[in-house]
Length: 162
Image (cartoon, rainbow, N blue to C red; front, side, top):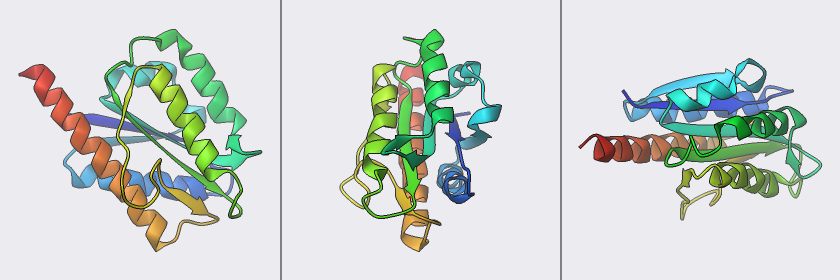
């Protein structure tokens, strides 16, 4: 079965709510979501899944130190994540708080690992972003991200099996 790992850090619970909305979208595609706080995730977890979606609050225009530390440690899996599907999401306290730069920084790390990232022509082009607690729009964009990553991961895993 296709599996998607959703890793996140959340200080206030906003990013955590987003992670569970992403998982809902993954589940809607018949794919198994695995949701883990970054503090509970191991870089070995990255190997046993078909897709990886990472979420972080925005601190000083980029990802939280806990997420950055995890990604730095993921270098031991360099080249082993190539071809997996990736995605990212972020939250911040205010408009212009660096949400997009945070999502792009997360996506850069996934691209350096050789992962595949699909953009969207609707909503948050790089990935969902929330201002404070995720509202209805943001929650739907999170579900859409989960569905999009799950569909592409299923397609790629069926092509490689066939």
